Image 1 (spheres, one colour):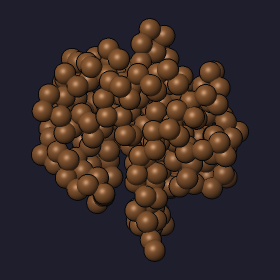
Image 2 (cartoon, helix red, strand yellow):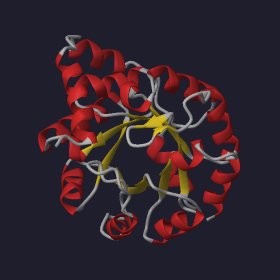
Image 3 (tube, one colour):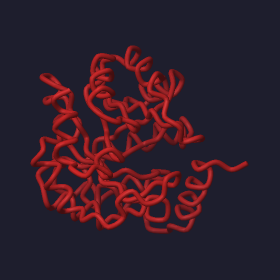
Image 4 (tube, one colour):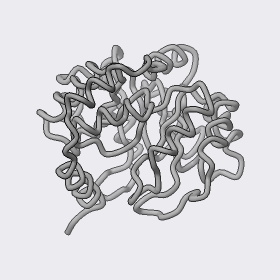
Length: 260
């Protein structure tokens, strides 16, 4: 029986197979972009004193449907910045999450925060597109890529000057991330097959990721108590989407995470 991840990846790989843009041209264009804002550097600096928060702009999810479909990405970005967000994450997958490159551009242009493109990266062109649309970091999901693809995409990200967050779920994927040279590692608490949240897995993994790596807990952060336990488990930052975009007061919810 196909899972959420299977169908999403199939869509993106089918689209990538039809993309005939010359890769060398895209690499040259991406390499010529202005320097990024420093996604990893911002987290590393802020996390010295307290838990950093990556606030996400997310309109919908495959499992829950609309979360905040009519949100204004510029307004939400300014709310996040004023409440003390360290960085932002913006969904650009349209058919499954309701996002777009336009959302990312609007959010980034409204603030001074570094922004990661949250999407399913399945080709070198996807890596370049993240840079070309203005993102400061690109997401590489270990569960969605072969080891060879992970290594190749990470190397390309470094070459064109964009940070790469490698998302993992277990020790085997952590090993692959470290072998690829990842300086940013995110542990997704949400199982990409069942879409259920496993908080204990993130706590366990926090203790085995090297302290030299920026450690991020992703998804399923419901409030200050979760944030506190993840900080105690060794994480430098949490990436929070649903809790913020569905909150009646996103700024207050974000401040509570920072205090925790």
